[in-house]
Amino acid sequence: MEKIIDFKEIAQYCIDQVKQECAEHPQSQHGYMTALYIAILPDNQIRVSITPHILDEAKRCYIIHKWSQLASTIWYAAYKIHSISETGEVGEGELDDKYSFRINWAHFNCPEEIVLKRDGETIYSASLWNHGQYILSREVSFLWDFYNKCKEECSTILESKLLAKLAKKEQKIDVLEKELAESSIKEEYLKTEIGEYRSLLDKIQQIVEEKRIDK
Image 1 (spheres, rainbow, N blue to C red):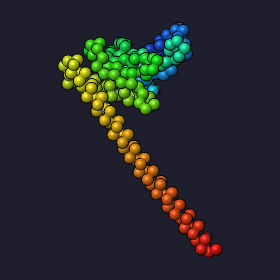
Image 2 (image 1 turned 30 degrees about the vertical axis):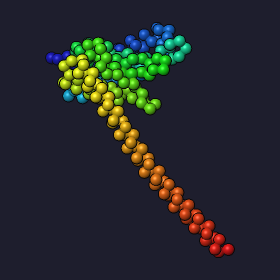
Image 3 (image 1 turned 180 degrees about the horizontal axis):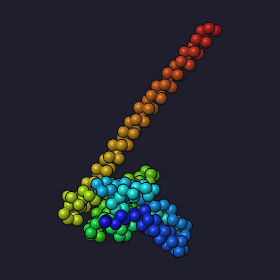
Image 4 (image 1 turned 180 degrees about the vertical axis):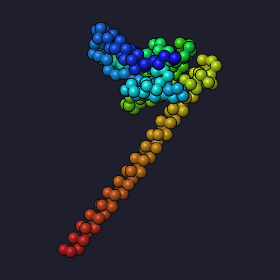
């Protein structure tokens, strides 16, 4: 009979371990902040959540730990990734024998960024912030899709890097198209609002004119 792996139990053990490390480290006693749970389902789809319920259906999973780290006199966000395999083995962000991912800590003037590596060499990186919005969950989902595409289409690191450049351009186009669509909606809304104000102004002017005539 195949042994059922309790991902929730292993994940909680990993969280307790990181919390203990934070408590014992003088520069991170400010405390453990959050855990982000990433479940890889049997059909290879990804689910991301701040709660562990998604691990019930996972074939393997990842936990992204986040805490505050003191550097000089400033607190920065720090991260650690635990990977839990199909057999319950715990690693540090390994996707397979070639690929892994990590999150580079924030430091002076540089935000956190997620990084995909192939044979230890960075092939993709992206900031976790976009126009002031924290986008870790979105970037994790994108990275998973990109990793699978790399496995299928790229036989060399150079090919992976070229595909990453293409993916970033496509990602930027998607963002710009979304911003354009949003600005178009705002523009239409403003036009409608202006039209309503003008109509109201015309009615007020009409009432004023009628009052003048009555006098």
